Image 1 (cartoon, rainbow, N blue to C red):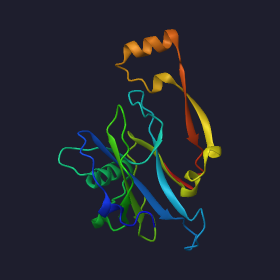
Image 2 (image 1 turned 135 degrees about the vertical axis):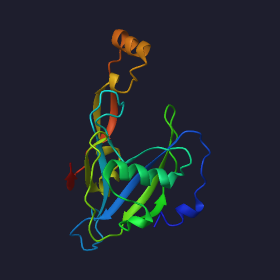
Image 3 (image 1 turned 60 degrees about the vertical axis):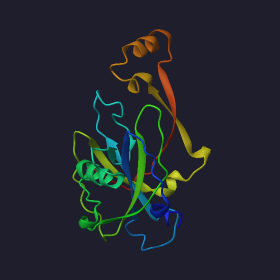
Image 4 (image 1 turned 135 degrees about the horizontal axis):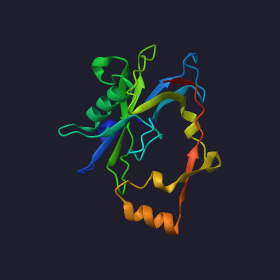
Length: 196
C-alpha cells in the first residue's frame, strides 16, 4: 500500500512547535475481510464544548501538542490515551503503528504530524473519554473522505469562534466592519458507531 515504507522514508521537519494526531483505522466489524470501499473505518473525536477553546465542538483526530522530550509517536500515543483511553503503544497490544502522512504546516499553530495506527486486536477496546476534552468518539468509513469536490458541503460559522479571546482588536473590527461569519468546506461523516 501507499503507507509501506512511509516510516523509513519520512524526513522530519525541525520545527520548534509540533503537535501529533493519531489516524486510527480498523476493519469494520462484520465486514469479514471483504475488500469493499467501506470495509476500513477511521476514528474521529468530537471535542467538548468549551468557550475558552478555539477548537470547541470540532471534529478532529485525537492528539495534541508535544511535551518537552517527546517525539511525534510518543505525543500521539500519550494524547490518545488521555483523550480516548486507547493505548496505541506496542505494550497495549490492540493497535500498531503502520505509517505516517506528510507533516501539515500551519501559519498560526504548530506543525501537525499525522501518525497512522491500525487496530490489530479482534475487538476495539472500550473508549474511556476525558469529558473535559472529548464529548464522543465515532467510527466512520474511510471512504467518506475519498470523494471529490462534489462531496464537500459549505459550513458557516461565527468568526468569533476562530478569533482568540485575547484578540480584542480583531474581534472589535469584525463586529464593526465585518465579516461576522466564515465559510468552511466540510464533509458529512456517515457514523457507524459512537461512544460518549
